[in-house]
Image (cartoon, rainbow, N blue to C red; front, side, top):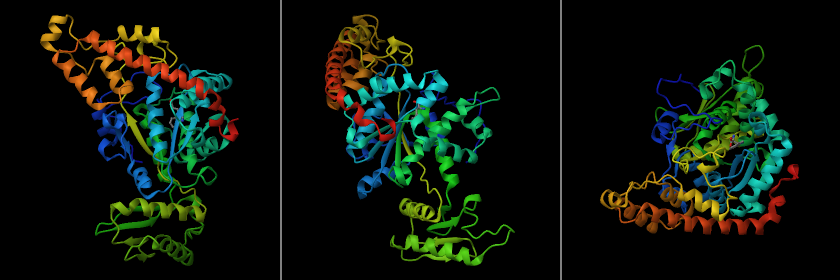
Amino acid sequence: MKVTPMGEDDVRIDPWGSAQSTDYGRIINQFGLTPFKGEDAPSPSKLHRRGIVFAHRDVEQVFEATRTGSPFGVLTGLMPSGQMHLGHSMVVEQVRWFQDLGGDVTIAVADLESQATRGVSLEKGRKVALEEYIAHYAALGLNPEKTNVYFQSTRPVVQRLGFQLGKRTNLSEFEAIYGFGGDTNLAHVQAPMVQVGDILHPQLDEFGGLRPIVVPVGVDQDPHLRLTRGLAAKTNWFNLREASSSGLLISLSIHDENAEVFGQLPNGRVDKEKVAQVFHSVVEAIEGLGFSDIISSPKQGHVHVPSATKRDKHGLRMALLSLERRLGGLGLLAPSSTYHHFAVGMTGDKMSSSQPKSTLFLRDDAATVEKKIKRAFSGGQSTVEEHRRLGGNPDVDVAYQYMMYFFEEDDTYLAELNASFRSGSLLAGEMKQLCIDRATVWMSELHEKRDETAHLVQEFLSQDSR
Ligand code: TRP
């Protein structure tokens, strides 16, 4: 991956910090995300319809899988520390949406990361993960039969994979991605490497095999995705790019692991016989995909598929990754990801578990919910008279925002609320009361569900985590 030095006014994303840029337009540009178009998604959820899920990387390969009925997976992770709040529920809603589309779900409990970066013991992390997080994941409707929860500390393969891929990055890249310096403690190097293992391991044969994996996260996690995608690409044995004439070109990417298979002799000479064999196997691997013409030129070092278009890239890549696996490589596909906006904190600032007034915890009782919403930051004017005359601003009104993010499913009704608040006919206190009513119902339903699904928590755990 090419790393460009940070400019003066570039956004810095710190996955461990509490400060978070909400300049989403700039984030999209600076980090090369693709805007998420809700209308392109199959049966979009409210988060998609309302632009809350605002960007992605390569999510098309997942939608493609849903169209062709091929398998895909969803992976996300949770930090077992503190209480679960509304903000955390957004990822669960997205995971559930992908699950409904047919994805198999893997959830990483980041107990190693939580221990190293937040001082939570593995024992405590386990308890918090099960009683606080997974209990609510169950209540929020994840299906235990299609969800696999594991702990970083008890799944050695994620650590092994992280270690193995460590050789394809270095401290300069960490400096560029995370802004690390000489005094950064190495837990902040190890944690991302384990997360790389989390994200990539579901593709291994013993965890479901080669298939697209989508990672729904808050945009604060994008640095880890950039790292992971770069590392996956660097291990690949075959390159796929657009030909200058037309079509796509496949070439070999030679490195230590494949030098022998690719006929690169230790003395620097090339075993032409072996190279011919590899090119033959490439042609064989893609023949079944239905291209009219495949031109193999071992001498020029590539296979040219003139009739292939951008749309064929995914299919070709999958075929090449399978071939790589048959030849002894890892065959890793770069993961897809989706990103959501952060809901505003109730005080008008950031939402944070360490600031109880800034959010609703999923265990808050009705009285607390009411109190917090009553005191929440308002987008109304300071007097009723002024509000009627000037109207309010729903974009900063916490009660309205929480209806939009969490509690109100009906788009038409929400649009009415927005318009009447803006025009001044709906008062700030009235908006808060509507939000209190919805929030109270939402919470009490969740609590009821949580009691009903409590016995399922153990069923979410994978064998290695029981
Ligand atoms: N680092 C994530 C957080 O701070 C937790 C996490 C660990 C994660 N592994 C993951 C998130 C894999 C997404 C995918 O919340």
